[in-house]
Length: 25
Image (cartoon, rainbow, N blue to C red; front, side, top):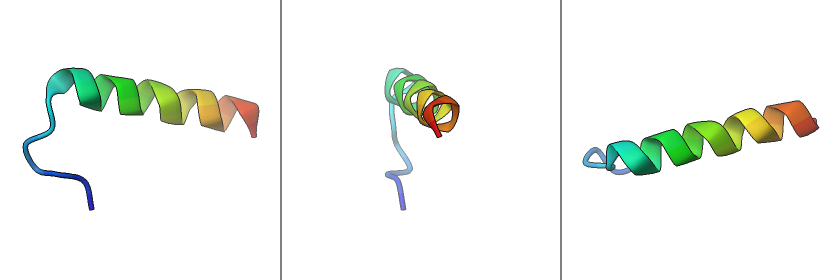
């Protein structure tokens, strides 16, 4: 589980990374 207090930047980065991963798959 991710930390509750994740910075918006981290959230955006993670979201972007997940998006890229989805595209790669």
